[in-house]
Image (cartoon, rainbow, N blue to C red; front, side, top):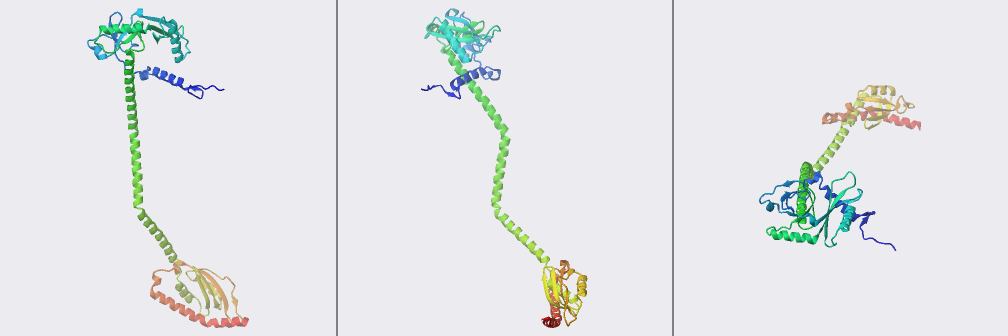
Length: 391
C-alpha cells in the first residue's frame, strides 16, 4: 500500500523547507550594506549587572552612548543584564557544511544536553562568534532558567515602578558583546524594527514607482497624443466620407470625359475625306463603294488607270499607306478597270475640330458628297452591264 506524505512538495522539492530557507536568507540579507540602512537602530537603555548604565543601538552594537537625563523616556526600550551566576555559557563548534535549519536543530540539541534545568523551564539563545581559522563556525550557547529570570525581572520592576515597559534580558558573552534572550521586551523592539523596516521598504518602492512613472510619462504622453490623433483622424474621415465619395465620382467622370475627348479628338471627319476624294479622283473614275473604319478608308470602283489613281492618292497630304488588297481587273468590252484600294487617313489633317463643324463647312462637304455621287452614278451602269456580259 503506498504511503502518503503530508509535506508540500513540487518536483521533489520540499516547499515548506524552501520557504523557511528563503525567509532566513532574506533575514540575513537585511544585514548586508545594501539593505542594512533600511533597518533602524533603536537606542536601548542598558542596566548592567554591576549597577552601571549605558545606551546601545541594539544588543549587537559596540557603540556606547553616555547616559543623559531623560534619555530613557525618549528611547522607550530598557534591557537588564543578567548576572553571570544566573546563566550558563558554552562555546559550541559545528561543521561548516551545515544548513541554517540544521544549525538551529544542533544548537537546540546542545542546549537540552547541557542544561541542568527542565525542558519547560529552559530558555536559551545562540549567537555566532567570529570565525576561527583553526576550525568551523563557533556559537556561544547561553542557558538560563525561565523562573529565575522572571523572579529577577519582577524584583527590578518593584524597584522601578515608574518604568511601564517590559525590559529585555541581555547576557554578556564577551566584553562589549551581548546576546538577548527570547521573549519579554525583545519582541516589542523587534516588532517596532520590522514596522519601521517595512515603512522604509514601502518608501523605497514608492520612490522607485514614482521614478518609473516619471520616466514613462513622456512615452505615455506621446501615446495619448497618438491615440487622440488617431481618433481625430477617424472622426475627420467619418465627416468627410460624403465629400470624398463625391470627389471619387467627379474623378471618375473626369476620366470618362477625358477618354471621350480623346476618342472625339481622334475621330475622322468623313465629310472632309469625301470632299478630298472628290477633288483628287479623276473624271474617268467612279466610286462604287466607300467604307471608312476609324482611320482606314476602303475604295472600290472603276477607273481607266488604277496605278495612276493610287499614285495620286499616295501624293495627297493626309493619305498614307496606299495599297491595293487585290489586283485590278479590266472589264471585257470596256476600257475601265475594276479596282479596290485601301489607305490610312492622318488624324492631324482629317480629324474633327471645332472649326470644321461649322455650318458652312458642313454645307460645302454635303455639296461635295452630292457631286461625287452624281459623278459616280453614270459609270455604274456600264459596270453592271459588263458584269452581266461575264455571266
